[in-house]
Length: 230
Image (cartoon, rainbow, N blue to C red; front, side, top):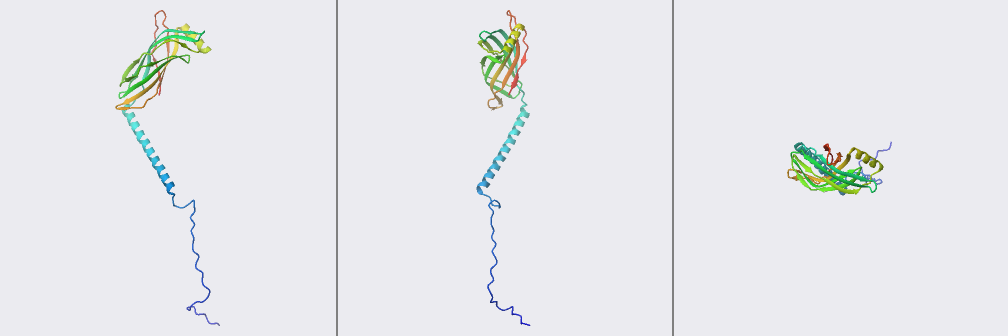
């Protein structure tokens, strides 16, 4: 039996290669590292969204408080009286001869809201066609106040009526009363304490039947409430 080699002695065989080193490759799409520009952009977007959301909440709370305190009511428009002394339509030249005077009231029922009427245009319409217009004087209306307007339409103008509208005119002439519409185009501002709002453009439509005066006698006119569209 051969003797065992001395394991405690020096080893003079071939050199032992070193262990392989580990290399790490960073993936381009992953990793926890963030691009500085991208991070800054995300932070800005987050901050802006939070600010906008906070402002919306504040504005909503303020609007709710104002509504609860003021309890605003709609302004009411009426045609209280109308006088029609002439309303003749010529089919030969499509000309309407008219003389119409109105009394209109504007009722502001609010206790804490005043109204600036910066511009008022009254338009008179028959058969879907405008035949006259008038600009009224601007004014301020205080709290719980009723104001009166006096638009007057007098003159003549070209009005193109269709066959149906002409037939309606003949029928209304025989009855002695005409269906007329008056529209008010306005620019107003609301005053709440010391605060004044931006200009608002409401539209008011008044549809009414007005009798024609005959031999100096006028028939009863029925008061008509107008439709308000904000």
